[in-house]
Image 1 (cartoon, rainbow, N blue to C red):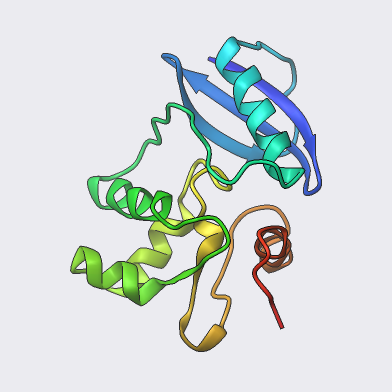
Image 2 (image 1 turned 180 degrees about the horizontal axis):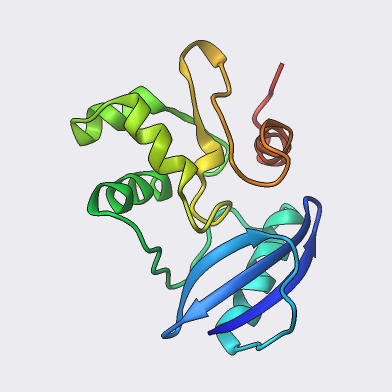
Length: 150
């Protein structure tokens, strides 16, 4: 499996590719690098996003998960840059429950690119975030996109 690491404002990130599709983004550094054109493009797009020059990722993705999780992740990809949606709104769209949506968000294998940080609770509550430093990272990602956080 091809993989690479990059520095980000949120620490080291590692990207993983399988069959010419991005399958994971994890916090931390991989032991060695096995780069590929896709991973180089993903790194370029992530750096542009962190620099405020990219609002939508255009990468082939293949996140592994249940059919429900993949449906949630597809809903997340529809949330535009600089906006948020509530867990309950996504649950309604999928005829599910907010907790189930939250569980799928927590299992998102490609955070940032599949923007689970854009999902919040009702009444301006942030909800949770399983990546990086948790809510601190979620808050920073939302601020990066111009979303005011109190």
